[in-house]
Image (tube, rainbow, N blue to C red; front, side):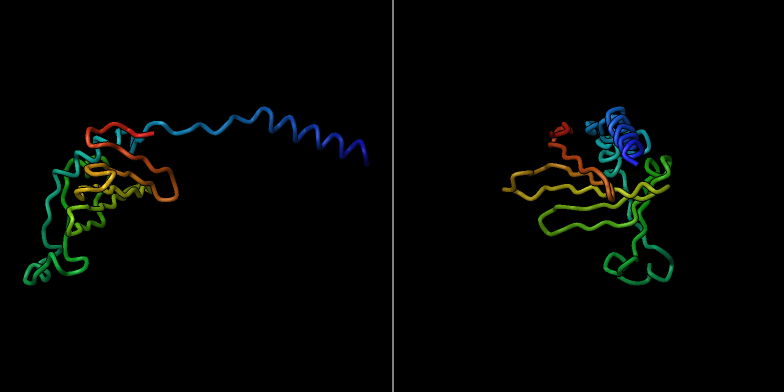
Length: 138
């Protein structure tokens, strides 16, 4: 019994010693495209009524009444599923496609520490912060 326990212990130590350490992610990519480029693609988004029925109303105020069209993102298999713009100009966009949910927060609230910065956050994953020039902050 002691030999078996010792053998299992040695095996466990060897397995841990040969395991690769988890690498710190130092680049942000969505579907192989740099996140900063994805952020720039968001500027090409058009908003339209989600359907003809909603178009007869104030569709921009109807929950789910807006459809977001962005050819650049569609070519990557992504679409904007949620967008909100706050009074201070800060906005959040949620992109989804092929199990790649990611949210992009742009902070353009004057007087804040991260003014004009962008945060890219993967659902259940890493968070990346950019300055106004697109430099990834550590």
